[in-house]
Length: 359
Image (tube, rainbow, N blue to C red; front, side, top):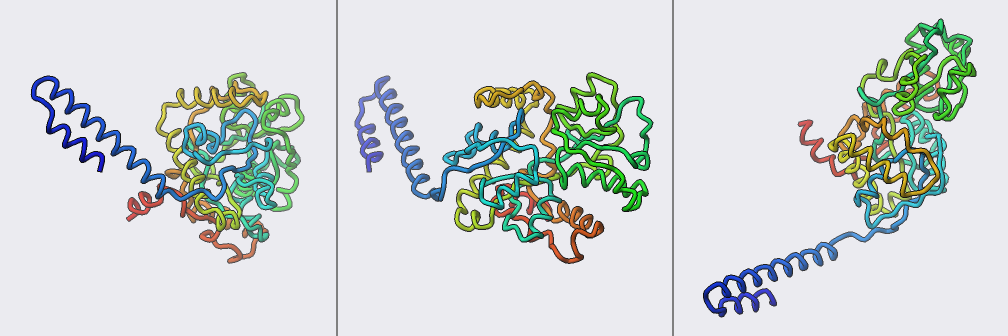
């Protein structure tokens, strides 16, 4: 009713310059009131979040997509609660399964194995992978005699954790190189934190180390090492893992689940569309402001998201690759797990556009 009264007052204003000014003020007031009314309407129609805090584990010296999403304002009013750091995807999602944290992420193979063991979790948005700029490499010293998969028999390979991305890719490399299952067991995996992987190689503690992104680029700058192979050499560009939520959390907190996935998906696309130098600058600021006493120097080497699909959408095919591998390796039985039940894109805002594009 108030906008109508204002309009009537405008019609009674005197002519001339004062009339123009008065009309302008009236139009502005109408616009402000209209925006305010729409804002109130949006608030009235918004679905309230069942909970506004999500517990999670971070990674030292890195900015996760949920952290970026929160900084960009994509999660509000949802908040993240940092409970510590991890260097292991399998540990991260196991902690979700036990209910000690709300969100965690890991390699698809680790997710499949945990769900196959009846853990009540579900993948909701892809968050990491490999592309032309972001990939996982397996490195040896420049003068190493190791040239092929067979040369790894009896050797030690550094990985960040067992049963995850790096182990699966290595075992695929060995299989393609013609090693038997017995021979492959003669290749020893050594768990080494990513930040000390280069040091372990240079000091002779292992013959092969795994390096990615910023750690890889810094090591290559120092020289004296060479790539043996990479995950993209075997699989091309692909999304390698996803964030998971407990199924009970999804049932009891659908609005919070949607807000989380929506925020992460938008953050991925923001990072994809924004010039890398701007992304790196924002990462550096986030790390500085959270004051966790960590080294942010590696951020300057960040190049891309590595996520293959828009907004981290998950596909059957991404998971089926690893299901087939686990069946071949004897970990799963044929037909024990179906890709379609391991994940949901229900909360991803990009699912509609992706479906339309595929038709």
